[in-house]
Image 1 (cartoon, one colour):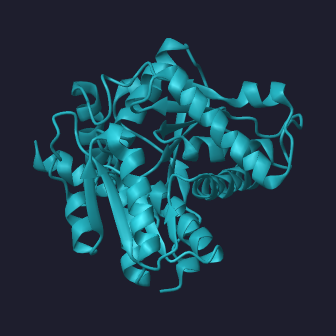
Image 2 (cartoon, rainbow, N blue to C red):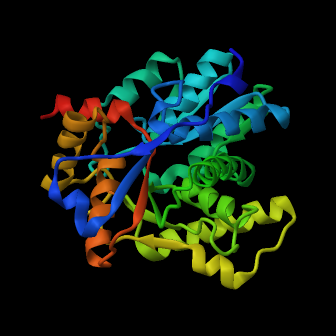
Length: 330
């Protein structure tokens, strides 16, 4: 497999949904279809996993330790890349609050890809990772951990490039977005988008695109989410050896936890309605954990802020197997 060919520029098109709320205050909605990435069911984690694997190889490392819950999109895509490229893969899977692990299609695929799954409580992750690294080194491996600084920088770079795609679309089409909304989980997707905007050759030029990038938290409380976003920005700018005006940087970070709905993977009837109607009327799958929740947050944010007559882009960050979990459980 040629890993360089696993990520493509994804399309942007106008979104029409026959529900009055989605046309609130004369706004026009567009969608960037990162769910159509051509590897492992698509999504933002394909972009991120590709950058991580390329960085791992560039640094001469030969074993990947990934992290999350086994049902996460990141665990699926990283373990899929490792399987395709014959790279040993270990998944540190955090147990649910009830100390179980919900059965999900992503989890089934992770196991089918031959990943070595290590389950533990969230509080035990640092010790488990340290021991696993030591064990692998003792066996002659040079492990690469997806939550180390180098990997998080690589993850952010994936969405610096994605923002470049959005920037080109705006210039080429003449359709300038007032807002860009996305699901914000680990923060690397949103941080990459912010950096991409700050580094755009069009940034700050009158009459050129200046969209507000809004991260809809899917689990984290506001302060924790902001701290992580700023940490990602620090790491990437330090890695690039550049300095960005602090006032500009602060202005570009827009993050809200108002629509978390109780925590990770938790949902409500409004999110269910979005997941159902998006596939019925647009043929686009959303899920309760990320994209459906973020879309619901976007609609409520628009109402709460009384946004009118704006061009709004929603970045569909993927998660098709989570949609199948959703319809299986209906």
